[in-house]
Image (spheres, rainbow, N blue to C red):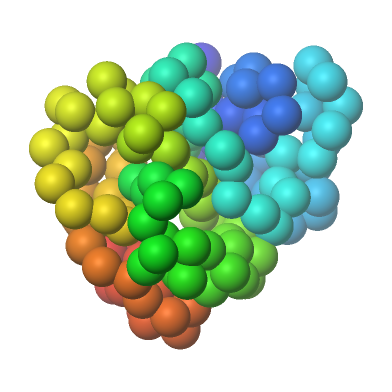
Length: 146
């Protein structure tokens, strides 16, 4: 059983769920399974299985960028999104889902335009925004909803 002082954090590498004491989040914790860092300061690339694990099991907010390789605004926003991830982890997990490679994952969320960022808490959508944003605006938006 998890106490409020212990959080479930999903590894960005092997996608196993780890229990981490809240006060240890900023101490560069490693995964108990694969022994790699739980926080890399970079967005996690998702597929169908890892999307379900990252969104459904993390007890920190997860921001997912729904994007596609052919999307110019998506490519323009990518460095700023990565910068936001670097600055906001470990309080928030940033992830990316390629809607062209995994349309069946994006479909239930009715993503009609890309880039679209959705914030999930406890596996539930709590906010979304569409359109490319610079890093400062991404961070302000995420902070306003988490």
